[in-house]
Image 1 (cartoon, rainbow, N blue to C red):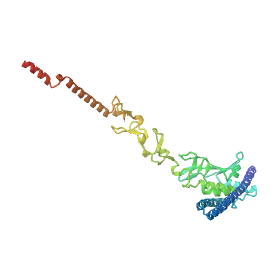
Image 2: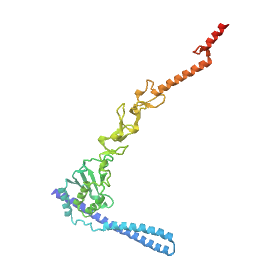
Image 3: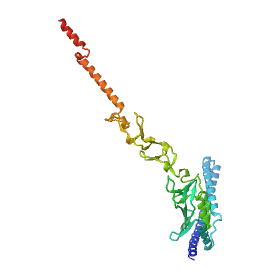
Length: 357
């Protein structure tokens, strides 16, 4: 008895919102007709202007008016199509609460779970677990807010909430390829969903939403299923799962296995842009494992520098400089003190002169 009483209360709340929705629909029809009438009057006005411009030979002005007419006709076609959709006889509202009570009972029988919240003025069902292309997304709660139904034409009156979320790795707000921040991108299902609510076919409404959740449209996902479990490699752009992601501490970015290297010194994973090749031995090094040569400031591995942090090339350069300086000093000594020349030619000449005396 208590269950029937609660269902009747819900049915009355739903019926009131559906009546308001019907009223709002009629208001939208009135507004659409007024907009279409105004656009038609603009076409008539521009047609008269075009005729006058042609008669007066103002062909440049006539060309501009023709362009306005073309735009106006396109607008009329779009507005007429919209008006046709909202004036279609699909707004049948249940005549009595008993019809809605039966809808609620059917939902309770057919869905995995059905619940109502009088405080939140909402009814909801639990979908079956959703699996798309082998990716388990879990069950979803489809929650319809009764007091928001009259705003159907301006905003969605329901939410789609992941109960065991497996969100997309690139965007945690996306819990389904077509659900972002608990809002469903209805796509081609928009018309069917709208008409089901207009007619008070609650079971059909929830069924349509559940069917959309079990369908994947690769042309319009918030996040493609191919990128669901990972992030794109910063280098090559290839999508990678979390288990295969390599983090480079040098640039704070994620890379795939093919775009990562390992430091020969500490075995740290680093990207191609954050490694240095020792110019002496060719080892791959991360920046923290490199040491600058004190002379040339080029980076080397520790084993290619001596105790003074000098590379082999600079050591050899130092030796060459020392030898050059020594040779230069020797030449200066020969020019300044010829008696100390190593061949002894001058001293021998001096002694020979003494002997002749």
